[in-house]
Length: 183
Image (tube, rainbow, N blue to C red):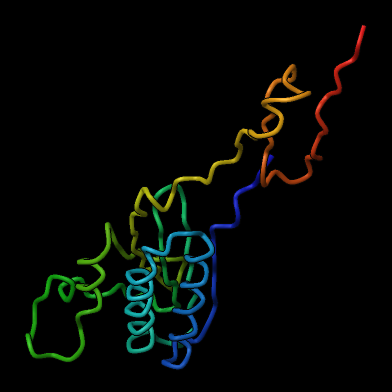
């Protein structure tokens, strides 16, 4: 049986500006490994906005956990911190000063994600999350089998059926073709 590669990643950190770039690179590497490169820009932009919010607003500390999970055709990115205050959702509607240099993080997440939200976590803390839909082209599994054609279709072995050789199947020994026995 072939097991899927792990499609879950978690990173614990202090939400400091110097660490945000590191988390972006970690998420990018995981998404490349999961072969959903098309989601890298939106996922890293969203996690940057969420971590910046933790850095600017979370109390009593900046400790947080980033979780990234690819399940079926949805990527979910969440950031959990120790501040029980839920984000101010009016910022996500775009209310406020049009010349402000900050305060648009949730509006960006709302605009670029399929869905997003915030919920309390435990007695003290919250989780802010967003989802992205993976393009169908990213999710097509590679072919696992292919027929081998060539010298076995003509010549001394024409009485044997064509073989199918499975590629990428661990713990399955490659079998030699059966030898025809004469009567």
